[in-house]
Length: 149
Image 1 (cartoon, rainbow, N blue to C red):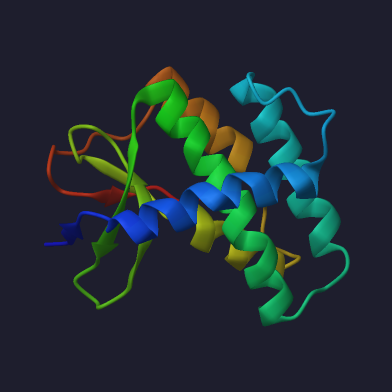
Image 2 (image 1 turned 180 degrees about the horizontal axis):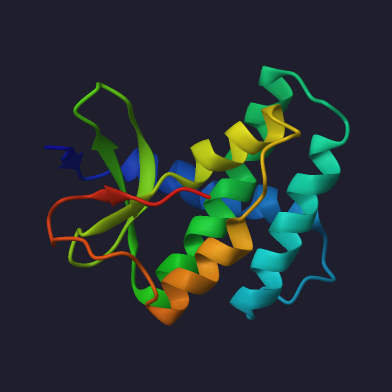
């Protein structure tokens, strides 16, 4: 069973700083008060960056701010929160977690994976809409079912 740990104050601050990075990256014309607009802009940015065929270091530089901004929209719209989850296979990372802990989304990792695989279909907006609309596969509270885009 996956395990969750609470973020340290330093980790929380580090993640919050990613918001400024994301807004610098995406620019001032984005309506940051509208989650749908933010998600559409993040998806478009991912597609533009993917076309450059970036290396792992560059993908990492983009994945953290864009993935954080994506996850923040779930926090805003559905009251999800940031945490750190370790899977049974040993994979561990920051993710957003549903209030009942039924679902998690490793949005930073998902953005990273997309940036390195130009052939992978970018369903980030679809997943956001499914979560926002409550149209998800059944999952038990406390099971940390991973949702990926």
